[in-house]
Length: 450
Image (cartoon, rainbow, N blue to C red; front, side, top):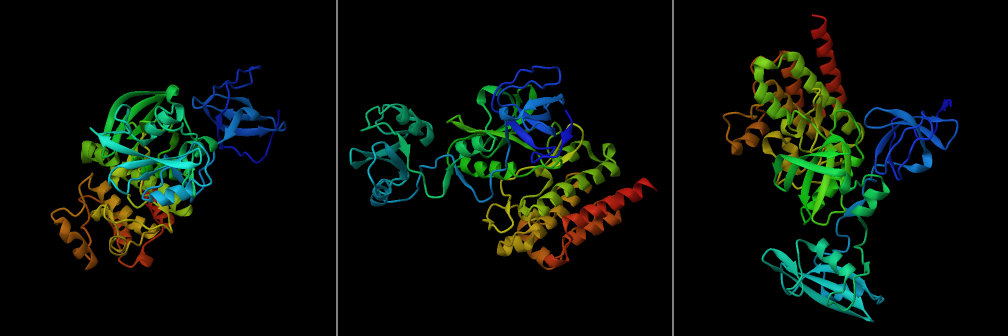
């Protein structure tokens, strides 16, 4: 089979829709759900040459696999697309018109703040069932109790259990797409049965990060309880489907089939966060070449985001992870948005955020460049907290008057000059990530030939 160029180019990821057993020694066996990478295509459009995660290469049938696509920007994904928030009883009844038995939605209760209401169309009229919180769980009849709204809806979808009818058809909020459907359609939905959770490796505000095993490969798994906070992580996963670069932590997939938790599965970064790596090893272990490499790694990942019109908004050494083979990769895309999007500034880390972003909510690649300058300072100070000996409340006023941190001990003058370029109050004077990457490469080349 000779190779020709076609629409599925080398490097394209695909996911198996079925098991495939090889028929010749040249074929590559795989199982349903396995992620493969196209190496090349053949003259026969029914076959591709691909490799699996173990690096084995062989031919695969084109109709057994589905191309993995980034979820389109602007898509509004919801774990609960039938949840309409604060709408009135009358608005709910209008949304469920014309009457269709089993058509339903859930809204926030107007008469009992903090509770919910399940609205169901049944035989020409709409019934409203109050959902109350009792001992931290949700219930309608104080007989069946549920951890969250998704579990409740699933229960009454399978069994009317005292309601006028089973829940048959969700009334989707306008513009919303069910997260499960979209992740499945685009090839990012993984199966819970293929994942083993092994041990906790980190704790976050919204859930644990665990070491897992997915089909024999080590993975990191964010486990988020399926409640209102889980929605923010769906947005993070959506962004990650669109990003593919060796210096960005790679999304492997999302598990949304479990009604109690959302699981975001990413590549496992064995050496943890960059800030912990720097602090635990320090000056006696890490030389200038290593620090420069980490700086260059991050600049390459950020240049990719810049080229694709994404703004990270939370760049810091704590949000960069280090792989087994010492590659630094940008992670934590929870605040990452397209460059045009606005941002609530109340949760932003003051010491890492550009003054214009804090003051006027003006986020751009240039505000990420400011944060990159702070990250460079963290790298060359071996993980120290920025603005040492300055009270948090005094940081912004001093910075806005032109204050810049002093160079970390032992930092090359040329690298400190880069930091100061990143900290120009005038955003137009800050370099692009492409320029930063080129300058870091120039520094590296000079060091090699000294």
